Image 1: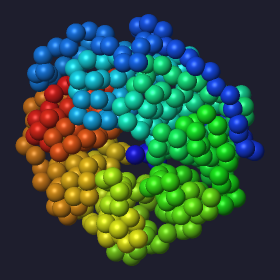
Image 2: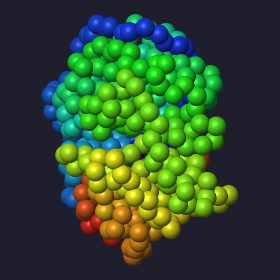
Image 3: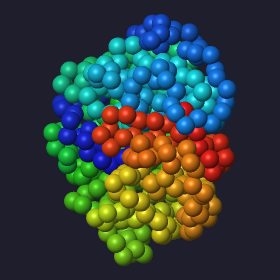
Length: 410
């Protein structure tokens, strides 16, 4: 899920403009030996797996960077990454976080902003993933692609500069990338590119057809034809929908309907999140801000986005410890969120939230790392939380295997 604050930061940092259709060549880059990624199809653990027990201290020496984000593929497989000296360091676990392998792309340097999931990184499954990087100097944009979980990466250098803020793949071949045209301005124009060959070449899909005013807060494609674009335009939330693979866009009235049901001003709105193989059920997260806390709410659909039902969550979170991370929904019914050191769980689309018993390990960890960065559940039992210190110099991952009742430090 794309965080609005990160997109604003990217928009201010990126530089350059891009026009015309793109066609690129590619070269195969094999990863060197540890501590760089291995070149084997299945990376092996850097240390022998330890006992699967609850821990209250992080694993040492396996992850040698401050983690910025992560993404779970299944209960045992996940990716986590950070940036050290402007070089991307990506790690993969195959055993639920007990051991980690460095699967960073070779020569993945010059990352001058934090690559968030859905912004610069996208994984389709445990084997196939993409990373995009702009050098911010108007010289080169590079896309890396892996088909073996990071064992090797194919680098594609685009001949013209792109300023990507969203990266979204729906199949091994079909993906979209949204670029801003003038990164020196927060309110910049937009260009949408698409690929039908796994990212080897990209074509301009929409430019003038896209809303050009405003700040992008999210983009996702429900299938190969239906896309959703969320924006903030002059301080007001907007949602747009495409029914032709991103070529044309029309404003959706779903946000206006939500605002008529809620007294506060809806400011932070992200793209819909869809569930299941047919992706007919989903939700749109949004929040009503105040000076000290954000009040969360949601819109839910069961017919692919034709109709949306408003759900006031009646929960909020402290801005000092959780400024931008919204509740996470695994399905249209099951959701979790963290308020300080207490986990809340909903089983009725956010209508009611039950606080789970305080966990000692989570509480001790939160006292040292009181900033929530990311929250994701991959099943009803397994979920991860990424926490960091207030000075943003250190971070730690914690894991639950019982739906949030107890936690262990990875």
